[in-house]
Picture 1 (cartoon, rainbow, N blue to C red):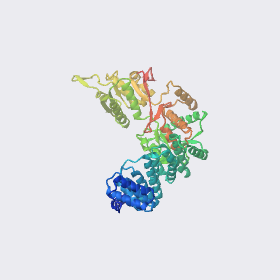
Picture 2: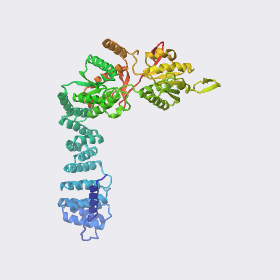
Picture 3: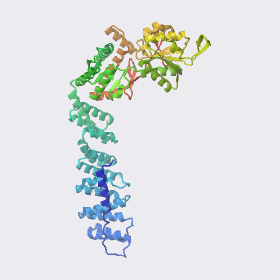
Picture 4: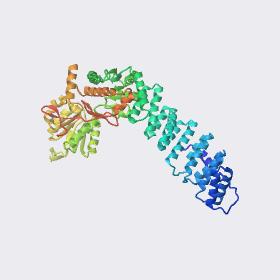
Length: 627
């Protein structure tokens, strides 16, 4: 929106313009002269430098032939004479007469340039801006457009408006000839050098032409360097080198990067590890830590990588202590943080890491945690991830389209039921029945009977009709699901697929309901120890050799997350948290033992989960390509 004082100035400018008198005509009529003869006589006087007689003759021509096509040419000649005589205002009046009354004339571009130069020479810099703002639309060649923007940029520099000047010079550059580029580039660089860092970053996003954009990007890195913000400087320069590799300032950028690296090469990368090693979540924190430590041992044994160290902090399962621990890690200049795990501590740690500009990969199911900011990532098995994989396999591999849900009336059951129903509908299927039960019960007959249709055989007898659904989803733990499954069979709900979450992946489930599960159960899992892949086998063997026990999902996801970060910080030119964040965003198809992992636009890990069933008294992996 135009500022009020600027609008007022323009209106006054236009009013004064309307009052500009038309060139005064004082002449002695020579009716014997034709139009062409009179104009030719004026031209001869002009080229012979007889200024006074030429002016009189041109004025006579304008008076006698005001509608002639040569009027703009006559006005242009008169303006040139006024310039030579030092009568700048009279010259400008004639130039403006051409500009505003003959906007499509061939003389208009030159007239515009002359007016701008006239204002500049007289130090009338604001008039340059307002004149430019009121120019009529018309067809102007690119070479003139370039000159116009240069003159406007010069005025803006005199007015100490380097951001506006940089934009003007950038526009001039896009319209200039090769011979003018070097001169314009110098003006552009000089204007950018006077900008604050924030203005450079903002303007560079709006510049499309690579060379001009490159000047902004290089200056941004230089500004950060001069303020000793080496992390930001390195990220800006690396971005410049990556996006515009042929720019003329690339050599300077690389030299500056080398200097930054020399100044910051003393300390190797340190990864913060923020886990609940004591308190109510300590069992999970210590399991995750074993995976992280094993990843460090295996990574450090490989050649060709830069050294990496761990800075381990105990959150004590306390959100306030988690926040304090993040502060401590930031002061220790960690490149990234793994953890925490509990919901409350994850929220506080994520906020603090975001504010401190350090990437954090949380190991938590907290809903929408990555919405905290662009430094917050998650690599963990979430309800949404499980439901998506479960529904995709059931519908697209098994051909199931009609479902029922039997769920505990508590948060876990409600969450999974809502996600499952939504995912089924999104894939074109139907949830025909959805019944809850009291999680304190052990007899679930009443809830089960509500799933299919019940019809009466006699006053004292009832029978369940054949169900119209093909599968039942039961989001509950093995202790309850193991009781429910046999009761389904007892009530004649047989030959129906049973869908469960990863917590069904338990020996207890097999012990309680094996006969009813085999070949009919489908569950999701983030880690399957019995997988045939070489990576999983090597991990499992190394883990058991070091800790004397078999690893589970928590250990595996800790291992994957740490290895992912160790590899990221070992990428050349990744020196600071900003560049670590950028590389994490670029991760696609990381070959982890918890599945092939990528980070989507939400910074939530995207991966294919394991799909399991029960066969021969044990869990086995289903082949997605062969249902």
